[in-house]
Length: 121
Image 1 (spheres, rainbow, N blue to C red):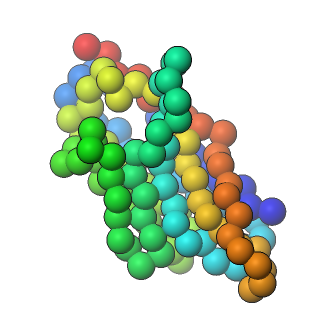
Image 2 (cartoon, helix red, strand yellow):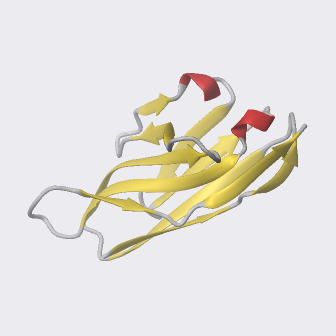
């Protein structure tokens, strides 16, 4: 009922920047928290950053001061500005949203298909 589509991944040199975007579409009544997760080869998926509908943010310690999450509620989009990228940031980045399609019930968790970010040294 809710689809998430990421864009903006790619290959960048260490120290460079990338901006990820994620658009939510479908039958959406409300979106609570939106966030970005990442999964590197052989590792578990981990939270990178999250933002509530009111704009409160939460970051993984490893990206604090380098990454900035933002969202446009009217456009149902979330962004991740990634600066000072390091090789250890290399991973597939997934968009996540807790969203409701109707007034009733609790939000469900939705995931995008992921976008590859590769940082070369």
